[in-house]
Length: 541
Image 1 (spheres, rainbow, N blue to C red):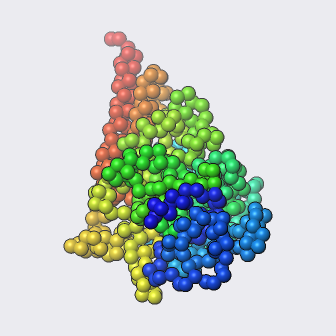
Image 2: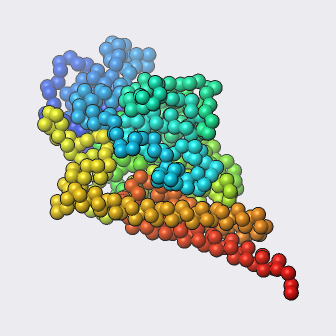
């Protein structure tokens, strides 16, 4: 049935048609009878693809006016001047799916508060400022605090727009949940705090919200209201909600889907060989519509590995430099909206082939990749992945609402905080205490390797500085710099990945020890060169 509906949907002629009705999980109850004279048959006269998706779904009973404003005006006088307004507010979904909606927007109150900086002695990356010297993330790189805050935290972080955007009312409203511009205020274009950066860009923003889906052409190319080259502050003012239900749930057909353009491009490039493929194929039907303005990917069955990979991946969303000739890579290049889908062992080679690196280290001049949160690539091929476990089973466990009905929490929890629901449902011979102990044990071990990798990267940087001042030959410095580039990626992948190795302990150990080995090799190259130079300079007796 889905394939038949998709065959019709492939002829889509309008964005609003495919995006009209956001949905979370489909309700178990049978749809109510269709309301009389709701105008849908008149809508279907033009939007046949919507009928194909919607009428066979659990949203069949919903009138188009539920999620479109100005439908009466459009029906009375169809045309672009009376085009209906699509409601992208997740509250539309929440009117039916109350438990899911409320869990999504319930603040997490972690022990020790939020805005935890990674680059401090107790953070995930104590030596971050030294190892990322020259990059904007050194101004603030904080631990995440939940999907409901993903937009306001992005806009307010010190590295994004120089501190221009702040929380209304100061710290007392830091946990306020609501529309972006009810929570934040714009201090004005002249506002600039010390020790901040101006690293924000449109590609980054469109991955944090669903509000731009009707205004952003596939891969951020020219043709939409906004594109990769747009003024970041103009784009921000059109963002009122974080990612919503339509990211993962088709609005009309209720089937699982993905909408993130760079993810779709990466999968569609090789459906048989990507991290989500099983038995030589990926369960994703890519649908292009309005002459390629947008594409979506619809699944036969839920695969939260792909749904979560719309954000939880390593990606590039910013300008950089070419390895080959040192020329700049600007937002004109689609390399500034790119998902590699490669793990820690593969990522450096991938970016070299792509001819892109993010920045040069301030001390060594090494060409470095600034990694994001590569959870999907890390998880691929792990023990849990091979067992068929998906992200939602651990991070969105089944709970019971106040109405007594079961639902999947959309708060996206840390399994260690809900071990009974997340772990014991499968590991029935275990206990909550044992599950937490095992999780912490793996993470402790991995964090130990992360600290050692940081130490040796620091040693490499320090030794490079001494060697360069001592006049070591440029060719030797180049060799050490190459080791820095290798060691950096194998370390920083894990400070960017949010599980502290739990998603794939074997991969974490292999690559972190690889980072240590590369750093030690670089130190040796430099020390050997300095020893030879010192020996030549020793006075003859």
